[in-house]
Image 1 (tube, rainbow, N blue to C red):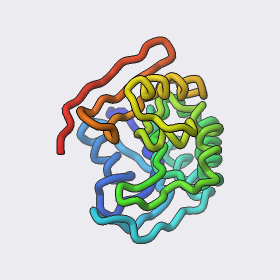
Image 2: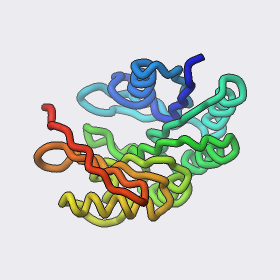
Image 3: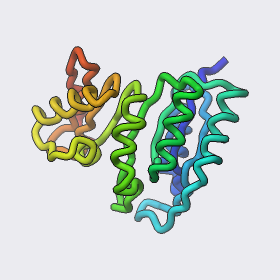
Length: 201
């Protein structure tokens, strides 16, 4: 029996992000992928042209349907655009004991479209982050969560520590937005590890 992972995220019609990208990744890793769609976006490689949020009750019902029948060994969040959606997902994570939770704090699409309302940042920080086994912000997302600029590698290391201090069991601060080779910084509260990778255009 394949392990089951649940992605709780938006739908990307272009297939490059959101639940489509998550399900492809799950399949490559030989994991059965399930999904709870939080929003429908009209997007392609050029940008996002429209967004429709799904009702919070329907999002919870999708999670419940998967958990109660198929079972979930791990879950990942993506686009959670509003306070109501974040709080609903956080409630479902607690109620259904989704302990292996990856929180990807999606805020802005690559084309610049905002995918997280400004008034929802605090809900993400206080309601969902403490439930995460690991949080995986890029540099701009980490800056918003920690309310400060993060430029140097030393600041990236401190950012990972501070995200753990906010309640995440581990953090990976991604270095793709920095200059030079991409260096992600992992911290689990006891160790800090730099994950170096060559930048690929």
